Image (cartoon, rainbow, N blue to C red; front, side):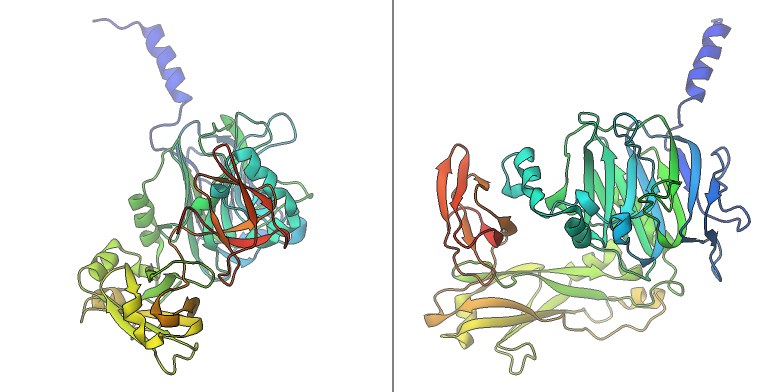
Length: 476
């Protein structure tokens, strides 16, 4: 069959304007110290503006200390995309930059509707201190944030990584995902963010670190121009509120596909260089709950998590734990654990201690401290320790965590419920569903008055005024 050459030429022209599947839209890896602005062909070269230099003693690393790399004609992703960077911060964003340090920014907001995205450290004025679950609607949730100024919110969130995208349905609003933990100063950090067309996620050192309580704009459409100007190391090239990154950047990449968690984990492992970053390789076991101030009856629900450090961020490590490692837990009336009141060894990540297990503390009412540690099966993790260039360490106890117990007659325990949430409560606050229970930070029932309204309960009276309370949904 003879093809129409004009139709073929038109199709080629159309395809030439579209990014190829899984194409890199931006890649700065600073391999040429004389031309830090260079991207791999066919991506356009940028321009270095201000103090950006090759990092002393480090190959392929740029030192940002008040400058920015401007990338013209950046092809804004029109579907799912991922951002990936490796960097090291010397300091967090200062107040005159709204406590933000930008890694990559393509956003515009002054001329017309907001568009683009930002990838940065510091939640700033967008940081929602209250969790979404405590409010019935987005409007009520957003209204509750008004008690804090942007300075307060910025200080609260200065160390969290932040991923924001402009929304198409509201020309001055943003979709947002933050990490639930801090970016460490002076340490190499691998950070990735993903928009898969439905959800936003953010990954720290190979693992999903998204603060699921504070995802803003879920389900809302994005607004990203097809051609933008991108800025690496700052918000833009202007002098007002520049949001400069103070530190080192190894690379920054944008791809027009949504990386999977497994792909991100593999990318992180590829970047791990023990002699340049961490030499420690051990499973760190930390208590997840209970902590002081939450309530349950008859038993303590204990949960721990394993933080895999450095090269040990490998699913095989967790699999090894589940296949034979165990957890030791100790309880004491003092943080020195002298003497230890209760000991237990378990083989799972979550377990219960019933009242009968705590008979040694019968009749005691007061603060209890707990700690945990990993007990590896003999020889289980030697290859991982060898790979990181460090000897296998002895298991270490986690820092002591407090909880409250009321063991008069060994009948009741004051400790967290799994679904408890810390909220900043105030008069008028709405709670969906069953009547909630509210407790102060020491575990005492809060003297508040709740009234039933359509769809739930509203806080009608709070004599002590607004403050932080533990929210336990539903009946005891």
